[in-house]
Image (cartoon, rainbow, N blue to C red; front, side, top):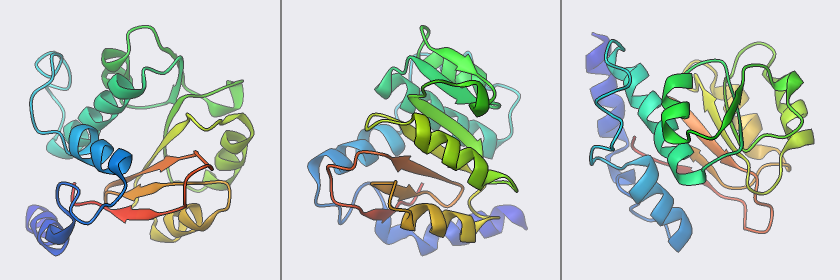
Length: 178
């Protein structure tokens, strides 16, 4: 039954596939060649073999984001194998309260998301990327993240969201069929 629901969600977002309707070349490139990349990467066969399909899907997205951004500091309590495979030189920290800087952050939108987000905004720069997990269960928190003046471009992937903190660009929320 849950798989049927995922198919319905995918079909409802069919108009937002592969970057359709995105006018910004850099945002289109990010959607087309990082977020929705379907070609196998060099580490796919080595990571996430025992994971369920959704964990593997989001984990591979984290891998591609780490591979694209090549972060110095990653903050994440999950998907660490994927993130380390994407950037071998990254320092992985599990608690955002211990970080002095963060290039790539992955955390679930849980009960204390506001405290963590305030901390992240204090250490983030225009190159920081946030992957907010658990969007489908916490849509109100996602809407508040999108509307926050400290965020820039956002990508709603239904299962997770990506937030860029580049304030030089016009704020925009993209719905992506992921």
